[in-house]
Amino acid sequence: GENVEQHPSTLSVQEGDSAVIKCTYSDSASNYFPWYKQELGKGPQLIIDIRSNVGEKKDQRIAVTLNKTAKHFSLHITETQPEDSAVYFCAATSEAGAQKLVFGQGTRLTINP
Amino acid sequence: GAGVSQSPRYKVAKRGQDVALRCDPISGHVSLFWYQQALGQGPEFLTYFQNEAQLDKSGLPSDRFFAERPEGSVSTLKIQRTQQEDSAVYLCASSLVDGLLQPQHFGDGTRLSIL
Image 1 (cartoon, each protein chain N blue to C red):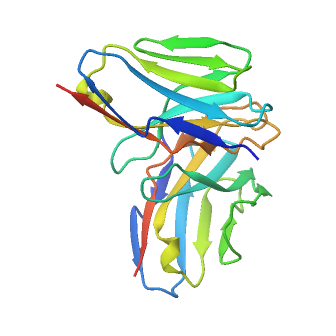
Image 2 (cartoon, chains in turn red, brown):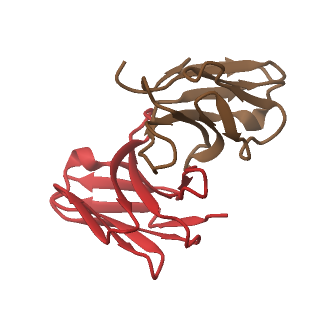
């Protein structure tokens, strides 16, 4: 089955700097890769997703890149703000996998004012 | 409501008791998923419904776990004879259309503590 590895487990950056979180996946059949932000006591909130027919997707300060050959994808947050502090999860799935998401272990991002 | 609603938000039970957790998906969403999230970990898949049909229950940890969605809307996850290792946050997610890799939208979960 699918296995998703996420790095780093913790990340601390200065406000205004960029943050990058990386994930690798094992199943070449995976073709949908969402990123979720989870705040304390809340459920995961979808912030951006990418499908395997696209190499990059951007939404304001957030971007995701996908390298299918290397089986890795990354989340980029630019101009970080204190409200970006949270735990971020990557995930992977495929239609063959009945769309059940396989999550990475999470990255705790802290933005220092 | 606009989002996925789960109840109760918190549940404390003694070891050996049965518990029932409820999920109200976004109206009209065909697919419904249950995940279990241990402290400090990512969510792990438990089971999946397409309308009222349970198409995948491969993630259920034991036969003490049972889920249903009888009318294709509200779903209940039941845990019988609870054990301490069942303590976790149970998350429900729904998506609009099956088979087209639609985004899954999560509720805020039920935090279950087994004493």
